[in-house]
Amino acid sequence: LDTGAMYRGVTFAAIRRGIDPADTEVVARLAQQVELEVADGVVTVDGTDATIEIRGPEVTRAVSLVAANPGVRTELVRRQREWTMARGGGVLEGRDIGSVVFPDALLKVYLTASPEVRASRRSKEVTDLSFETVAADLARRDALDQGRASSPLTVADGAVHVDTSHLGVDEIVDRLVDLVEEARA
Image 1 (cartoon, rainbow, N blue to C red):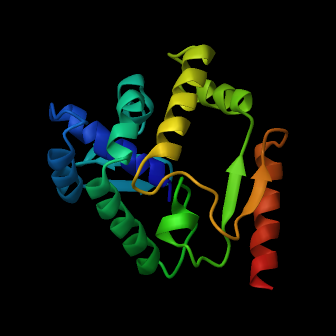
Image 2: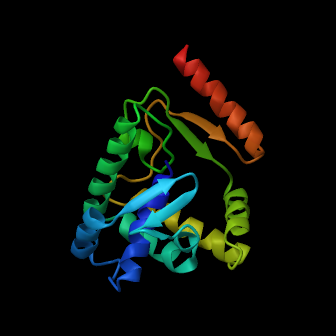
């Protein structure tokens, strides 16, 4: 489950409705009402495929405000736990999964990459933004997420650190599969 896409989905819904992402009370209520589905790389918001739009510059600029909203975090953490329990477990990707959502998870992995590699990867996904813009946006978001009062970005206790800067997708997957097998042994 791409939990970051959930925060982006709420942000998209707010923008689409003309709601100021900084209006914490209204956005928190919206988070309780919005229909979100994240599955197989597709993000649906209130029945509309928003997969591309949630990665666009407008949502990217506003998502840290929404993600810092305690009411939004409470609702989306509830949904993430519900999603996981309904499936008897799962793989969740997000900035506070091991520290807040499931601090007692069997396996917690903290994936990182150098700022340059992260910006390069993201700028390939978001082709309408320059590398420099993407790098600046990532640095700004990291700083906001590390400093937010509700669920700040941190390495979870017991997390295995995996630096992906010099790894390809297949190598990353192989490393993660090895970690899962080790955790289950």
